[in-house]
Length: 83
View (tube, rainbow, N blue to C red):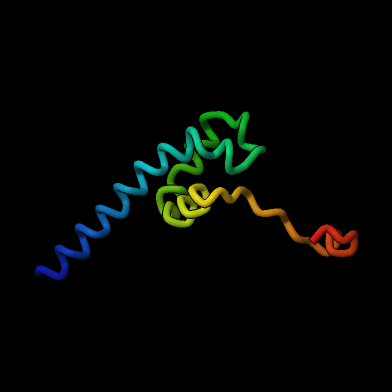
């Protein structure tokens, strides 16, 4: 029974931290993370809210280490030498 309680409380703490980070990210930090989301409306922010809540450790690591959206690497860019 104790093991089950630890799992439940750990999941609750994870999603609570995700919820709080999601509020910060969806309404403030998404602008610095992705320049195309600067003028996005409330609908976009509500759509990404649950995904940010689930993936908050990855996004928090990228935001707080100063990383932005990665540049897409395609065959066309490799040919032009834009690695």
